[in-house]
Image 1 (cartoon, rainbow, N blue to C red):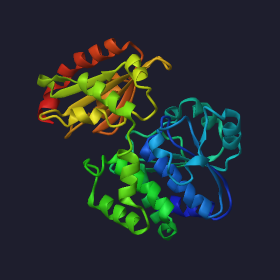
Image 2 (image 1 turned 180 degrees about the vertical axis):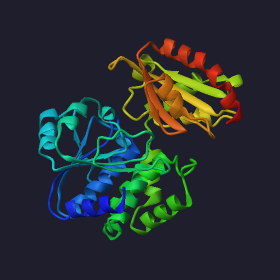
Image 3 (image 1 turned 30 degrees about the horizontal axis):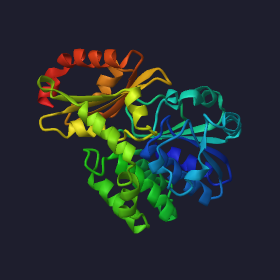
Image 4 (image 1 turned 180 degrees about the horizontal axis):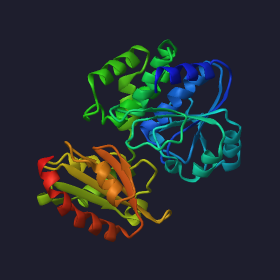
Length: 339
């Protein structure tokens, strides 16, 4: 995004517009935090702005300021489609390919609204007129902070905006432990705290409020954990029956994959989750060092993401998906050994 783009965006935002903000399907902390942070700013400068999420998201994000105003496309499709059709501007946050919005893809493609992308994932599609894309950034929330800085709006950051942006940076950096966490990230976090973000309260909401059933489900995932030493890999799985046994709610498995990655001498971790409603196996991959799970997911599991964190899916059974994963590991043993 060059200086001319920024001047044009500032001009666009200088008068009232109908604006829709869209995160990806199954939005996480960065997707919800970035869209809400931007929403607060746009409402503050008198735009008619709405967030439309493709579907629901975890309960641990539902305390954020103005979260109750987020519309879910899967629940209010006609209303959401009308808002998209009438939008002057559509911001797409935390994704860079329209298929990541699931059933919203077609209506977004048909929309004549000007599109602005803010995202940090690799290999973006070129659907947006203005693209703020940087794969070195820790999170889309950090990018929203930089975006506000570039349009001279840092002084508009208040407690609510700071809280939303803090959530996304914290969750997408694994509480500031991933390689993407830079000194600049920490300076931004310090400024967000100065603006009113309560770091202890935020951490408690996100990480320290667990249901009994979620903890039991974690026990199952840990019991299912397997290690393939020659590939420095750990993986686990959860069947639909195991999810139902402990009354699974969206977001309950968040972070489970990281337990495998925490093991000594493990550089690749995976979790396979059966989703019979959509007839797929959801896959989350994490890695250490320079081993790219983004490339692995793109090559084998119809997914993608970042070098050290990616997702994908499989249309076969849980057992067949795990067998495929195990079968491809020898192709990567050299890279895993040297990661």
